[in-house]
Structures are given as C-alpha cells and as structure tokens.
Image (cartoon, rainbow over all chains, first blue to last red; front, side, top):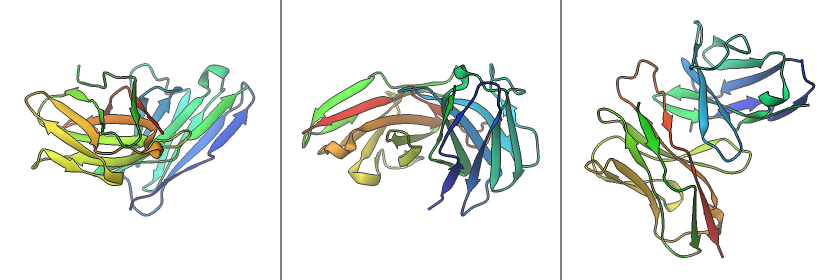
Length: 112
Length: 116
C-alpha cells in the first residue's frame, strides 16, 4: 500500500528558531500533498494544499510567511515553521494524494 | 458551509459488545466518505470508504460503516469491540468537483474507549 513518511517524528526547538518538516511519499508520486495541524484530542485543521511545482494554497487564517511550504518534487513536500514560538507547538501531519489521501505518521513540534 | 459532524466526543463500550460511532455530513452532491483511526502520537490510518454502490461498506480490522443517504449519515460499526480498538476515530468527506484534488472535510473526532 501507499506509504508516507515524515521526518523528524519529534523535534524540540528554542523560540525564534526555524524548523523544517519533511513529508515523503515512498512508493508513489503525489502531485498534491496536504499539511494539517492537530491540537490535543482535536480534529485536524487543514493548513495548506501543496502542489508540485507551484505555490501552496493556504487556508484562511494560516500565515503563509510563517508556515513556508515547498513541494519541489513529486515525492517530497516540506513545511518550515519560521521563527517558531511556543504557540506553534503542535502535532503536524502531512498527507499525499493519489486519488485518495495517505497520511504520514506526524511530527510532534515542541517550542520552548 | 460544508461540514462533517461527529456528535459524540467519546463512546464507551465493553469488550465484546457492538460499537457504533456516529457521523453525519452536510456536503453538496454525492461526496466520498471515509473513516480513519488514529492511535496516540500517530498519523491517521485508513479504515474504509464509501464511493457508490452497496450501503454497507466493510473495512479493516472488522469495521464496517453504513451509508444512509436520506439521513446523510455514515456511522461506523463493529459487531464485537476489542480493547485494542480504543483510539480516536475521524469521519471525513471529500466533496466531488472540489478544485483542490482530494481535499477532505474532517469531523471533530470521537474517542472510542473499550473496557475489558
């Protein structure tokens, strides 16, 4: 079946630093990848839709300069949280679309 | 606005008993419908989906879901719950004709607690 990986699985950083999260589709090509944010015991909030070779489409209320998304190839999308603050601490999940979405295992970001 | 609702934050059931996790949707057209399960600190795992055809869809780990168009519902069911089924369950809908390929609308999630 389709496998999506995320790296790192867990990251702790200091306030003000930037963190990059990678999302890879391991055995298929994905023209579209999605980035979600999930708060504890809450639903997934779609942050943006990432299309290979073009700019990401951000959901309302999501700062595109804060959450930089790059989809450089058909198997890799990256989310960079710039100048991270404690309120950015969350569980970030990506998914890759091949007629349906396949989800990565998530990345736990903790900003001190 | 289009939405998916899971009216129960938590469902408690004894092991061996049948379980139902409810989902209703308000999405135009005939959306695809999905159920996912999430274990702590993990991503979402696909359980099953409804596209068309038989209203009863069978999925992974013995789960099934019943599509009811008149009630716009897609409840998740299992005849006999296991303690290992305890997790967070999400219902989702994919509107057809969406300009964003594959974009999903998620419900709020329901925590299933199966007690021995």
